[in-house]
Image (tube, rainbow, N blue to C red):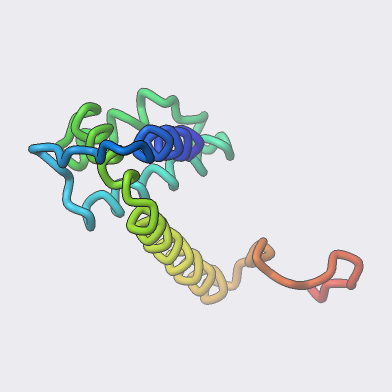
Length: 134
């Protein structure tokens, strides 16, 4: 996610000059780009948790490129193009966040049905000084 954010910010920086970013010939569709950004977010989360022995950047990139039948240049150009429209890019990331939240809720429900403990929600407003009922 850090790479995407850095790439997005650099695209914004260069995209804010008087020249607008030219639409690439093989632009990735907006919905597909949201799906790609969603998968990248999941891969970043896996990498930070070191799940399954860790995922390297190359492994993650190869997975994304193969799954969506794109290459790094197509992704970079499409990302730069979308990032040049700050409001539109923000809306794309809001959709990614919605998908992540929906998946979290779905998985929380599965854990409750299986009788397993559900990890605390990091978005919870509970005070850490307040005793928690287990």
